[in-house]
Image (tube, rainbow, N blue to C red; front, side, top):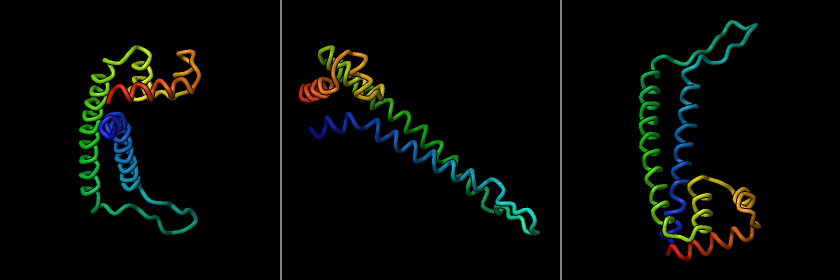
Length: 131
């Protein structure tokens, strides 16, 4: 069961890592922008220029990491597809919808004209079969 759970959850875990990198990049880019300006006061703060090369290097590193993670995510999705292709049609539709297309149970239930509890049962049966 652990292997199947790991297989199915891998794309989502990678997606979270990509988001973390993007958030870090956003924070770093904010540091590249001029600091706060306080009107009515003499003082204007700017980001120190000596940190710019360091920040730019980290952004480049994170962008390379995102590129690598995207490739890793595509491989993980392809692995799910390889396993799901052997499932009966309903189970395949549910697994592909949940873990490849990132659809929610209510969305899949609506599309398939089933109840949400039926979708959960189909998912459970599919996971059992995939073991």
